[in-house]
Length: 266
Image 1 (cartoon, rainbow, N blue to C red):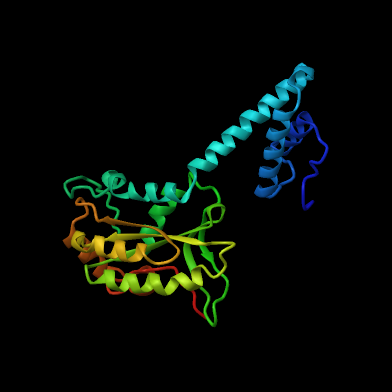
Image 2 (cartoon, rainbow, N blue to C red; image 1 turned 60 degrees about the vertical axis):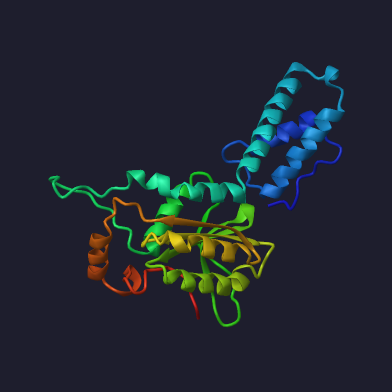
């Protein structure tokens, strides 16, 4: 793959043609930074040139490229760390359609949320349609003797998303310590990831402790946002407790130590 795109001395129509060729299916993949530089140079050149001397073909090609550049720029503005926080803040209202059917139905469907693993699954469904570069369980560079694996990474934003599961109000203190301990190894390569959004699912709906945890974590360096969502009321606390006790321990989850697929420590 060439390390750069030669744009020196090219006209707006030539740059537009290159952008169009790179957008075709099967075209050689180019790093996002190269494509962005090409679009920026094209727009600047198109503004400098005398538009009266262009042929109809050149004008159509340039207009098509301008539309694409504007659409891409607008899309980049909409995809930001603030967008991630806003999407996660919709978790509670989105759970309105979460299934926990009445036992009166012939074949009731019930989706228990018993561990961090289920929260990770839900967050993936929420974020993946918008952030196509979402990395699931992104393994980070080794830190000392340990290797860490973040729940999600969005490389284009330099952002990690960390999911936590709180069984009770007492669990928030533990979560605070875990997050603070993970900040240094998670953000050790700031050119890759420099910020973290923390999402906490509160099984116990202990809303009285939410603000204390959120304010505390937001003061930590590298924390972009903290979102805490409570268990929806259609998931009966008692039945979920019974289900969690019946669930096997270890990787699949347990009530005393909810399942998690990270970190890897060697």
